[in-house]
Image 1 (cartoon, helix red, strand yellow):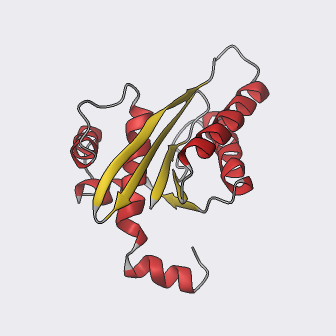
Image 2 (cartoon, rainbow, N blue to C red; image 1 turned 60 degrees about the horizontal axis):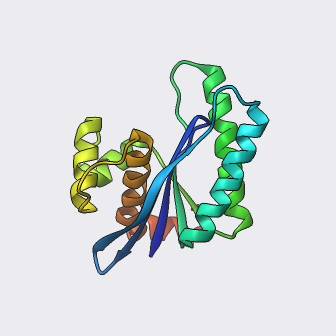
Length: 169
């Protein structure tokens, strides 16, 4: 199974493609879509959409795993991230890539076994599981890889299978 993990944003979109087969990980590629702060917001969304299409075409994922939105404070930031997330989801949808969403708690639990793990712990386990020599430059990229790992852990679970049969996920 090839999973494209996405950490959505509008300044930085982290992405990471992994293959999971026979309980082994193989990293296909990772990086970040960067948009310039001085560009018109609509142009930034267009860049995200176009680059996401290229990434999907190159990676050929079986599924996309993306972080669910959750914000505590800044409403403007939440709305802008939601818009960026929307064009990412549209890109996957137009290319018939099934989409699965995970909360930060689910990602932390899947990667480290502990839902309250610190960011550094998640990054270290991601590095170990994927046998990376060093962590990616951007935290968003490391998060995207962790989200992809989360999907591989949740994919075959009895809960996931039950929800799929019921048409709930």
